Amino acid sequence: MSVRTIDIRGRKVAIAQAGDGSPLVYLHGFADVHGVAGDLMPFHQRLTPHATLIAPAHPGCNGSDELGCWGIDDVLFHYLELFDALRLAPCHLVGHCVGGWIAAELAVRHPERVSRLTLIGACGLFVPG
Image 1: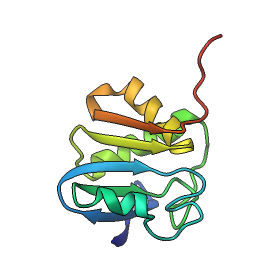
Image 2 (image 1 turned 90 degrees about the vertical axis):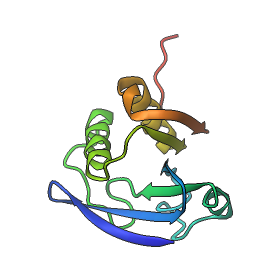
Image 3 (image 1 turned 120 degrees about the horizontal axis):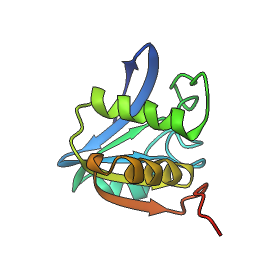
């Protein structure tokens, strides 16, 4: 696994990357890579023979700068800018916990950016009723 930091409009974003193959963007939850674990977990490692796992740290987590605001819209704009900087074509997007919320919102609002969506215990979704 490699960890690098890139600059997105003056904000540092830490990105863990491993594997080989089509890009799979993994948006972490509270208690996995970039949350409390500093390295890939066995779950993540099992993905790497089949895909290039790209795991950015959310704003304010594990080496990524904070955002000035923290509404879901701000987070989505942050990730759209990150996807542009990484030149990600439509990709497989996986989100766990709060990362699942972000992934679902991104897929609904910008379906052209997502070829496949996988949600694992997503939280925060607002569904009427």
